[in-house]
Amino acid sequence: WLGRMGVAYVKEANQYVLIIQYNSSVLFAVADSPLGPFKKQHAKNMKSWIGTPNTGDQTVFTDEDSGKSYLVYSYGQGRNKIYLSEIGLKNDTITLLDFKQVFRGAGREGNCMFKYRGKYYLAASQLYGWDGSLAYYLVADDIMGPYLPENDMQVIPGVEDDYAHISQTGFFVTVRGSKQETVIFCGDRWADFAGNGLGYNQWCPLSFDGDLPYFNSLNSWNLNAKTGEWEVADDNNWVKNASFEADRKQMPSPVKPVQTRLLGWETEVIKGIEISLDSLSPILNHANTEEERKIVIGERSLNMSDRVDFVRKVSQKISSSPYVIFPNAIYTLTAKIKNSGGFNKLEMYAESGGKRYAVKVKEENETWTSISIEKLKVKNNAVEIGFFADGQAGAFCLVDDVSLVKAK
Image 1 (spheres, rainbow, N blue to C red):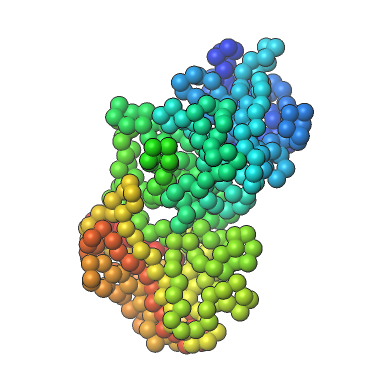
Image 2 (cartoon, helix red, strand yellow):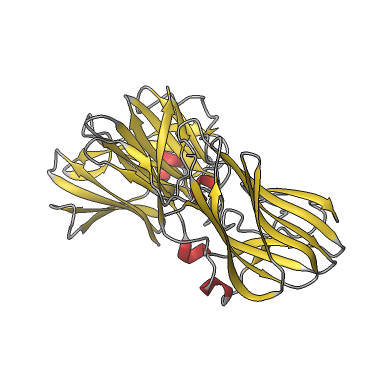
């Protein structure tokens, strides 16, 4: 096993070091250039320091102000402790100089760090394997802590509706521009392993209210690398969990995560069996087949069905966040659907400024079909989008790849 690689420059040695999880140890390889070639120098067994020979997850962090680099990593089993070690030169060997435990509590992975306006932030995700999850943080004035609130990681506001843009914490990039300092979250999305959407690294900008970070879950945005300023792009898709990949398991789920809803979406049962953790509950999402995944994104799609006659609405309200304005403009709402017959009424809709827009699905669609609402006028910086189904027992409608984008 080789994983969680990171490169740092060690001034005392005038060399670059590549640090890698290497089976049951940490591998150090050195080079004169960050582009390599890197040659193995030694492997460090961590057991005498932390109790396990290996790290859990690990990431390299460089403090641009001091020029020093650190390895942030978790305990090798259970990952319920997080440590920091400075990277440096000892006995003519580049290695870890020390270690300090900076967190002990619930298991956390994807450990990484960033610095913003003189404060250090420790970030991590839940133990969800390849799945996206909530992202957490602690903050400190000194890199070695104490990180507060002590042993009580807080959820970063803004990640809740789509599990950090369907990713887990990977690392951060800080752009120190002429006008603004911008911290960019880079989330790991395991698209090959997990099939949970498109792409591998998900880049989202953070905002701050004092020491409190805020996650801006954006599909498309523009960065001015010189000034550090950023803005939402015109082609941003404003729908959260738009391809229903944040919920990779069958929902409702009686096991981690225990959940009776699809993230970012609200399900209203007007008629039919209520949504619950009971085995008789309707299933809220559909497992896309290999053939379906050639047409729609990822493993999951929305499922509207029941074993009895049913009326159901699945909706999402979109509005401005504390840091990003949802602009009044003309939009196009699109989705892909696949449905049986047996519906008295089936439609995609949008409501804004007291006006309702809808496209009715009047016939069975045996293959995935695109539907759209054009010239959707958003007023008061808010809109509700959704799907309404009035169906007979056994009727089904699958929905995927929902998009709300400014009209060109």
